[in-house]
Picture (cartoon, rainbow, N blue to C red):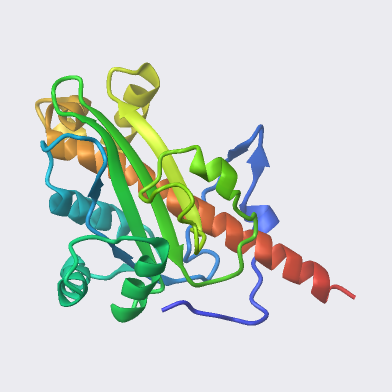
Length: 241
């Protein structure tokens, strides 16, 4: 569960160094004393393709989420059991997401959808993900008008409860920028042990899914951390004499 410390303050400005629009030191939830138990819902399919397993994809999303310090992942089978008890197969709205989150004992829940998918080389996957949950107040706010113009797990206009973080991207493995990201990811995952080298994350559908999930969870956690740091900064300013 979320740990709350009323006067906790790390020198966030010293740790979170922003230069040229880039974060040089990436904080984790553990760094800012904001630990969360997070559930992952089964993937929604908005792609029109039947060439992927939504449950396996959710497993990979949960696996990558568990890589982040400060995150405890609620097993997917608990989410599935809760949905089954309700006679449902998927998350249907932000309000439903929060209900399921509460019933499985989580602080947050990731709801995501596949918006585009082509399994053939070079593979392409479009993902849109949102993190709903409880925690420090929204630091940056959320623009539902702008969000309604983007891909979303839910229909536009359904933002009854606002996501704490969201990320939308189409990963096209033929794109040079994406390939550079895959190469960096492959180094961290010891891809040199494979005869394919970094290309193992392109040659295998499941490995490519894992890469896409890793990037998505990184961005969701980054946004959550940014919110926490911004809130702590405001609290620190108020506490100054």
